[in-house]
Length: 84
Image (tube, one colour):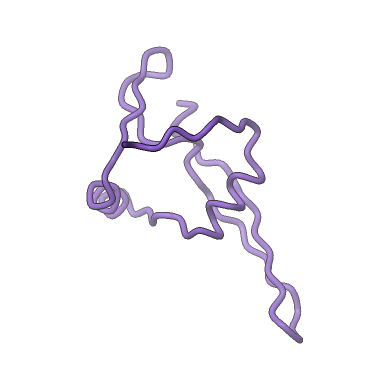
């Protein structure tokens, strides 16, 4: 269940001359994984596949600002390993 439990990420923004805005988004703690908590495999996805899966489950893909906030608030930071 640990890869399927949504995690809160807090966002804030202050528009020029206005009150600060705050929101909480709920994010998956990792990329798509197949299997059980004890035995799983992380699955890399193309952009079209990621959109299809997100739409199927009623999720949205994160914006750059959301990704930055998720990274800053993450308990663990792994070294990126981009696809070739």
